[in-house]
Amino acid sequence: MRALIVALMLSTPACSMNPQYSAPWTVRAVGKAYEARDACLGKHASLHVESGLDVQSVGRAVSANCEAETSALITSSNPHNDTAVTAAIRQDSDFRAKGYVLKARGWNHVRQEIDRDRKD
Image 1 (spheres, rainbow, N blue to C red):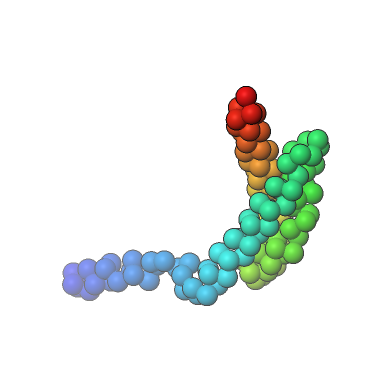
Image 2: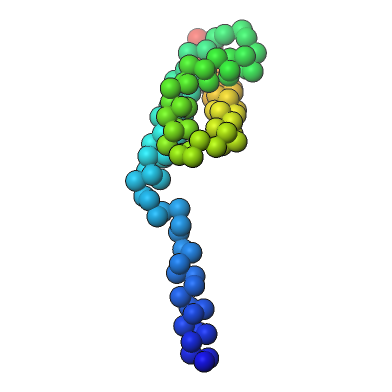
């Protein structure tokens, strides 16, 4: 009886190890969709560096420009069309877009200061 309990206890963790990798092609597709969305956000954020608009407005515009990539991400990571997941991914895209805008603007300010120092 004791051997049966030990065997059962040892085999239980093996069933629950890495369940997210039960479909590695799905994990890979979601990863590529995230990369494509983030690359798009970064590219479009860098185009709005000189914009005088606030970060919130520019972030929304950048996120809207990357709607195709965001939709591809939603399709690959939300196969059951859960509205909460869709809303969370869209909210994450808006948040990340603002982050890319802030990053691009910050780097541009640093670059301008370096250029100014070189001229002096």
